[in-house]
Length: 399
Ligand SMILES: [Zn+2]
Image 1 (tube, rainbow, N blue to C red):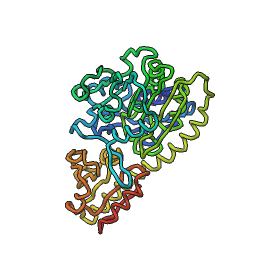
Image 2 (image 1 turned 180 degrees about the horizontal axis):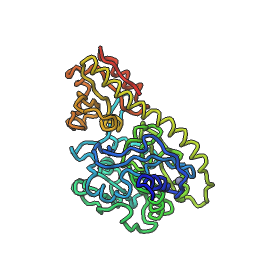
Image 3 (image 1 turned 90 degrees about the horizontal axis):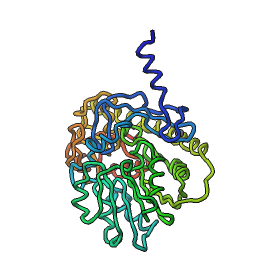
Image 4 (image 1 turned 45 degrees about the horizontal axis):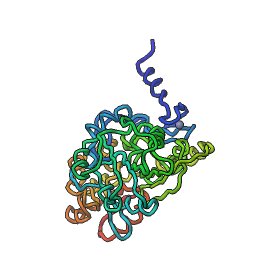
């Protein structure tokens, strides 16, 4: 008789690459996890697994579990896309300023793809319509269509009057062949079950001279994404090139700005040479380094907490990266040990994570926080460490 456990083991090995179907997969940290999962909008969902893999065939880095298989229900009912406050949105920080991600995206959009003549634009997964509202004047006269499957749809319709809107994901929308001059997908490709399938759909809808404008979180800059259950693909620049070329596109431009990476694609008539081996080699290096960083991010939090407990001093977490939200669940400590989550993005202030408040830098002094763990992208560590150095008596724990 076969033990139940043995059957499960066989099943676990049966994962396939979401893009190429290969079963030649290598597990990545923190595979084997099952329990409460953290979503990209900071929500927690029960009974979810993390089975991160890299495909040895095509190089795709993906979570073989997460919300895979449940995406339709998830985006219709669970995913809140930061609806706890209408103005809640990811913001971009540079040395000197803080702008919304929509403003940053608009700036890159106009720089890379200034739409001179009028035409038809489709935005897939338009969320709360932040991007289109941001560049409304510049694209007045364009015929705009938006798709959004989630509950932010009604907000979007209210905010973008006069725009053709469909409550739908891309899969259920029968795109008219060769119709659009520009197709925009911001923060979408990493969520779908098969990113190549979505790009092929985009290719179908685009006219011959048209262009695609994409924004995804660059996994290379975002190791904490290994803990995220709804970013099913952990996309890199190499993966974007590979997927784009397989879907029949040429990559015209790639621009990194912090964690986000933007890409402009145009239809390509030539068949591009297969470069999967390069994608795998590049991605394997990134995945290895990121797994180390993500594990160290959890350890930095545990160390901050332990030291604070020993000295009976408050401890906080800087940033709202997945590691800081996942650490109490993953390591089994009480979130009530966290005095506050500190984040400079004002639009998140007032939010509670595990019942703990999200507050600005002022809370460090107010709450007498003496130990703080950074859970941010490696690209921001230097900048944030400098900023925190003005707080006397504060120990900063870096991954
Ligand atoms: Zn593959």
